[in-house]
Image (cartoon, rainbow, N blue to C red; front, side):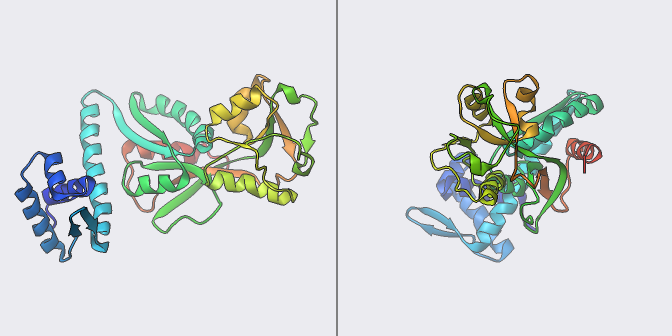
Length: 298
């Protein structure tokens, strides 16, 4: 049986990159940490660190234990937070992450439903790229990741659920009022663009639209992952972008932006969540997932 206290010391040593640094983080003596690490190595039957003058490096077994230690640490911290909030009549906290477009498309409506059902709750939201979200799920930093789905099969330890589809459109500002209601990307070689920077599923789908049109992705585009900034640039200039319709719905509804059909946009963007396969969610996490499932358009 692994001693939870030894696991906590192990995690501190990993974060500080040295035995002495881990002791300082925990405000305990270095011999105490060294002894705990030795006992931990004996308990698991493997060497966890390679020690050198420059610090420590984890063995393969150490890497495996680090992932588990991070998960345990996250669970304990969340338990403390839940108890503290519960004493004040607040449900949570629920920590979720997502890519900007997926969060905008799914989370606001879910929050409105949560407010009706759960009353007071604590929700923490972070925006990250796809590969970072997988790491946050595995370490327990988030329970749910809002992402573009259907691009590739998720890893075996992650489960993917699709809730909605949202077509791509060419999004333009008032300076492009002269453009028709439908265009092919092959007719737009003279256009100046704002396109996503992060090399995730969202960017791959947009790149696929250019490939379907048989035209290269613009090299002189402004690369921007902030949806707010992207829409502001397009609204105030002659530049154009490609976004899912729902992502730009607020600006489209008041006429400051306009959506133009793209002839090559024959596949919709699918959005949903990823979570740890077989993992348990918090009460608030279960409620949010249930709302997404029951309001799903698919």
